[in-house]
Length: 285
Image (cartoon, rainbow, N blue to C red):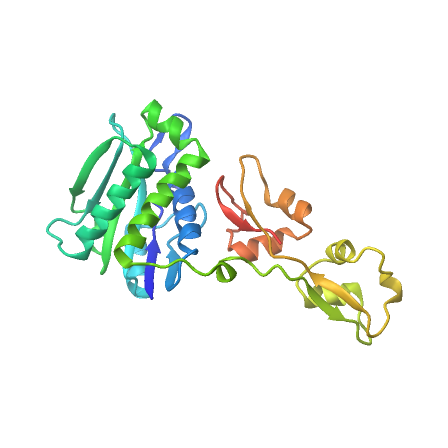
């Protein structure tokens, strides 16, 4: 089992680099969430993220969380600024062995996937590399103040390529194997329930963490005021996931998929403001 800690740079009151109508803290979260999604396609992987919403964390909080969890790998995606272009990554000065293997693998894979200008593999005394007690790499995925890089970073397909590059590097070094198809896909069977004495749509909605409206939708033609003992009804349909697009809100998604904003918040561990971002994968049903 490989424990991978993903740390999207910046967040909350710390926006990171800003340019071309982009914010580093949003881009890093989009990349990190996609890395997590792709890693979930593989066996024997545990994943933890320092943040899944727009939350401020100090550098110490990030490394302390990874160390306390006992992570094997620390991956921190960032976006660069300062007048350059392309991709580079950093490990702690003087490290050897698997850390350098991982840097080589991720570097090669990201360049291959994205076509970024190759700025090289580098070493630097950065807090998250120095204070993390495991293999650690910080990646700089394009320049937010370079128009060409920024135009790419505005495309969800390009964000996916960055994430896939990171994952391909991890897969190569840790020899990860894809899950079997039945393991990687959500259960497509609908859940059913046999009506017992005292059952109502209201009580069943509470019991199965759904809504009365959703039960009605799942059971067209069923008279909810005349439920018969022994009658079989559907109480849950296929778990559904949705990739967030610009302009989406949690309330819109809840209405569209017959769930509630509270359910979507709880399923996806959203913050109290229900913050979501483009390219974020959400469970919506």
